[in-house]
Every structure is written in C-alpha cells, then in structure tokens.
Amino acid sequence: MIKCFILCLAVIVLFATDGFSQSRRKTTSRKASNDTITINGVKVKNFYKTAEANYGDVVLLLSGDNTIQFDKNRNTFQMSAMATSASEFKKNRTFVEGQLLKILGVTRSDACKLRATLTKNSPGGWDGKEYGLSFCK
Image (cartoon, rainbow, N blue to C red; front, side, top):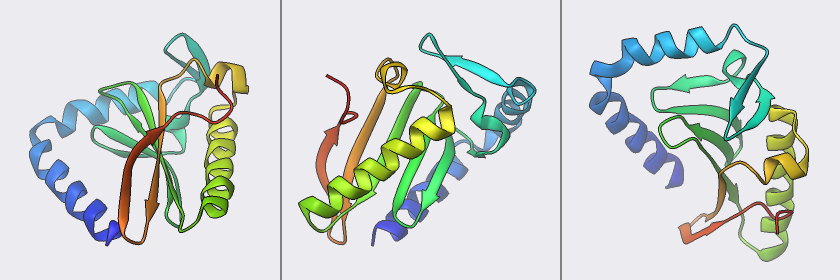
C-alpha cells in the first residue's frame, strides 16, 4: 500500500514538474562537481554525486521500506522508517539516522542543525506524526 502510494505520488510529481525538468537537471549536475555542499550552514558530503535525483526530491537511501530523501525546495531531509512495533521503530529509526550521518559525513551535533523529519510507516500506512532526530535536544 505504501509503495503504491509513493509510486502514485512520484508519477504525479513527474507530470506536474515536467516543464521544470531541464533546469533542475542543470542545477544537479552543476552541484555534482564539488566534494562538499553547504545546507543550512552545515558543510556536508555532496550527496548529489551518488543520489538519484527525482525533480524536487533527491533520494539518498532506499533500503526496504526505510528511506531518506532531500527536498531541494524546502532544504529538508525527510526520512521514513517502517515498523509494526515500538522496538522495530526504534531499531529502524536508529538505522535511518545512522545512514543519514554516514551519507552526509556529519556529526550528530551538525545533523541537529539541519532540517530533518522522520515518519513512522506501518503496513496500515503513515501514523500521522513527524519526529525529529532522536539524538537532538
């Protein structure tokens, strides 16, 4: 169900932004020549080199039902963790957050300066809540 929703959403975004695709591709390729980029004042590894660009979003991680995306328009990292129980959510949240740190090459302290949200997904759908990074106060 979630995969179907994500696929449908991707198709809608694809058609809605088709006219802007050329300019977005140029922006992505221009940024890909640098080793680091700065987001919200934090220097991070240039994930454009290895990530898959999808118009307004850049997919940094797609591991099963756990994802990390960067929304270029909002300068925000959006993560999701699949879970059917509290312990599974904690495990998958830790995994996704760890992958974010690894992909960006930042410390926890620097990650807390970024705009990042995490959602909990289950086979029944999204729980309606957005969580910040667990290690940020």
